[in-house]
Image 1 (cartoon, rainbow, N blue to C red):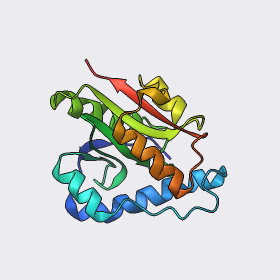
Image 2 (image 1 turned 90 degrees about the vertical axis):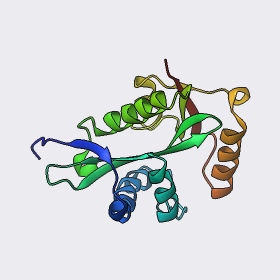
Image 3 (image 1 turned 180 degrees about the vertical axis):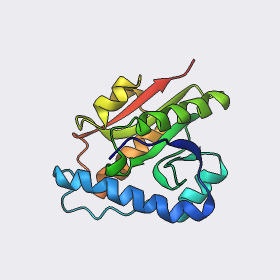
Length: 174
């Protein structure tokens, strides 16, 4: 597929179901490598996306026809922007859209005068831990986890994710 122009913009309320479809298409990659076997992954709820949208924390990467092909969803957690979800349709992957969406999250957090962006991800999956490391995030040690991040880890474990495969990360903002 030829590279096409993409734009970043705030999501529109009517697009939220499309973002759920983008997420579920992206999740298939994790099933393919065996990380989510036996788990019933559901998309981010429309209510949660709507809440985050109202806070300015849902941005999309739109294709030349202005259709969302990727999105980033974040919210405030323990005084930092927390990147909750970052997904790009696999057919539009490897074009820098994920990086652009992460940078948008960081710009937004700077505008809000927040000290950092945090996230929880898979440690070794190429498009997770190593990807975020290249973008300036660092792995957090257990003693560095804020109460909100500790709670997220508990929820991940209850859901069935292996915490040995998961890591919290943080990027300081200047």
